[in-house]
Length: 186
Image (cartoon, rainbow, N blue to C red; front, side, top):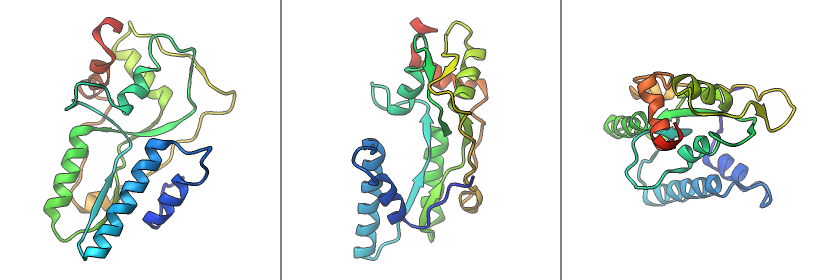
């Protein structure tokens, strides 16, 4: 399956599909992007938006973010994991993508970063291999087959020279996740 939206309006409509189904963080991101595109259009300026998935790495703030919480909340206790596939990114690669998009100058549009796409259980298994003292759930939250991996085309990001320097499976990058889990849990 290839993830693709033809316009910002498509994403905004998906995020606001049903008040009962809305994940408010995602909805706020979609609404903020729509506001940015509306502003750019009204003021005649080019705009670029960068769309990573789950992002790990060094934090600027003293608290953990949603991406780290997603994994942290699945270690050392829970009995099940969600049946979800995500695109994972190192925050430094995301920052580099922003810089490269800015430096390209004459570009505009939406850039979905491809990253490392995997079922959340695959990422949990990688963490457990690197840090055997953590425990991870062994059962999926439902009895359905694992959600299939999707593809995000990397052609547009490559056109800007956006390259992901180190795969997330590299121990140095995955440790960025575990650093936020807390030494007492490892």
